[in-house]
Image 1 (tube, helix red, strand yellow):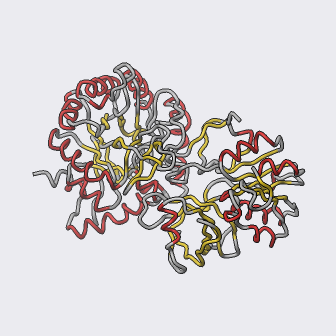
Image 2 (image 1 turned 180 degrees about the vertical axis):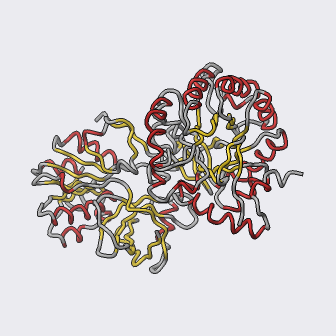
Image 3 (image 1 turned 45 degrees about the horizontal axis):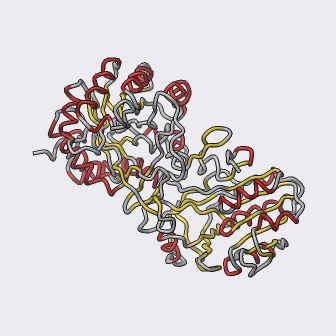
Length: 242
Length: 304
């Protein structure tokens, strides 16, 4: 499908937000991704959806390599070849009465769409986000606009509590958690919290539709594809020796 | 009207555009994007006698004009494929498919070939000899004429369906391997498999792929593939399924001129799930431009 860029600009150090047109259709579960073709690069870039608007999608991406840097050069009005939304997202129906949104860095964006979906169901989540430093913090105003004040941890203490978000979140009381962030954060969450948990994983991908098996991980229910069976997995599925 | 039909050792297929093994699963995922019955056939995910979990992550790295993969032949095993994937496949594909078989010993190949040879859903056997021979110091079967011939002979001895040997590009002697397969009874050839390569992560200073190396595919390998198909076609009269970086209808024509009877499309499917359908819809237009009325007339058309 061909989408048109409505906005594309920086929101933090090396982090950009792009708003794309959204074709009519069901909103679907939050936590899924668009698989985007970048001019001059061979493989698509899988980028999670941060916000599903009435007729738009917002994606938030970090300029980690050449492909994402080229995305920053795409102007408003440019057309983008995208597949999606792909994958299996966060199911708000699986939240208890008091869920926690646990995010790290550019893992925070899909939790925004989930936050809205939970609020629409009448469930009010708490949020705890970790960043390296204050300059990396993203989407805090968006959560506040939904009436959620996130607990913030930064590694250097420049914003919120100093240290790991998984340590900071120990002060909170919650009955389930939805997590997206770097793998060490996800592992730490599994060690720290016995509650029901759903975690969004990241791998290098090629097709994004479950055909190439480039992103398969071993789970307690056999091999699963992060792109098609995930990216969100229940904690019981993950075979991580934490 | 352009005639797109081609024949692979007596098996007539509607057109020569065939999704390549490992890029199309068992067809199901693509059938969610378009009706894949427009395809002549497809080559299913490389299957071994026993199930394999494949290699650790990461398995994918991008390259200029292509990609590396080190999936490591992840598959549920031949018996599972016969009992599940092949049985369910009729729901999304009516035609017969190419059984892509890998092995790590001659016995592995033979036993997997026996299982698939009995299946009506299978049109031909494509034997991937790029795998290391565990009884041969890990050297690939396809790396020298003697072991390539041995696999060919033993599989031919049990198979009634056509046997196409899928050659590795990891040899300096494509003509020698091609002739060895022919002399051992192969019905056809299929080439090329991916080319070994690697990438490093500048930050970690380590290879991107957990397996360190992987197979290069995509447009980057297309000229290499053409040259090898051409060499194989000049060395033998066997029908050839040509592949390697084919991404457009024009690439299909070029591959057939180099000697191919049919063409497999690989990495292009991973970039665009509609790649094969698009190539197929472009093909009659390109052929008309070229004044070609029967696509099979292109085969070997570029060999002097």
